[in-house]
Image (cartoon, rainbow, N blue to C red; front, side):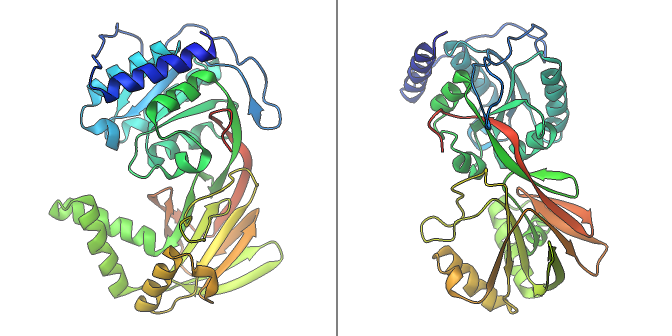
Amino acid sequence: MPQSSALAGCKDWRNRWRQGRFKAVPQPAAPLIPEAAISPAAASPRDGVSEGAHHSIHVILNASAGTAAADPVGFEDRLGEAFRAAGVAASIELVRGDAIVASARRATDAARRGTIGAIVVGGGDGTIHTIAGMVAGSDIPVGILPLGTLNHFARDVGVPLDLGEAVAAIAAGHSRAIDVGEVNGTVFVNNSSVGIYPNMVVDRERLRDRHRHQKWIAMAIAFLRVLHRFPLRRLRVRAGDKVANYRTPCLFVGNNRYDLRFLSVGRREALDEGLLHVYVARSSTPWGFVWFAVRTLLGMAKRTNNLDELAVRDAEITTPGRQLFVALDGEVQRLATPLHYRTRPRALRVLLPRDSR
């Protein structure tokens, strides 16, 4: 189907959905991964960009993601119709929890065999993190349907937050290669951190298990508890021939540079500069850290002496302990030390609108 027809089909789908005139269309039974051969992309990657629509895709749809959670089956039906209107054969798999990993592995294997042309992720940053870890370094294009609460990665990389426009971008088949970060062999697309945040997440999950608190209530309680304990970590950061010692509540490693200006805090203007940015907080008291956090949100972090920033291609972080809780795109793992961070330039191909930055 020509690109203009695909775009028109997606816009029509979006308008019908918004107006409440969308009816689910029954889909014929299909194998988990379609076995039909697929035409390769029209052009090979060149300078991080490739062209050509992928007319057969596999969609991994996180049934627990915000937008889909209310009615996963109905959402799956509507999504299937949207892809049909765009001229794309989409096999959609509705998954939850740990099943995402197994689904991603099957889809990756199918893409490497040439059975499908692209993998599409419907979910938030955690779901994208899972897929990226499996396909980074390959030539497999990844499409994104931003269904999470915050969608940090989708916003930064230029994926439309409107689902109709996101489907149209996937159908058009334009891709761009972006960087990922890696620590001890594990890929991250947004950031990784040590200190307060991973400790808060671990405590939040304990509170939810024991007391059935809502997620945000548990996070608020965990924040207060961490402030009360306020652990300061002794870390040594080695980047090239530079070595710095810190006693810090928080070390944060970004996949490319995070903006610290007012109204733009937490955004990234580029994800293909081939650098990690390491940020280390120097606050030594709980209320000093709270004040630092407030000033950061107001775009004033660089006006203080409480933040160090390093731009590196790789770094080694050592600590007296043998293991650390480390956050990776919002998920926490316990990793052995030292932590070896490195950037992997242009290791992930993402399907994006042609005019995305």
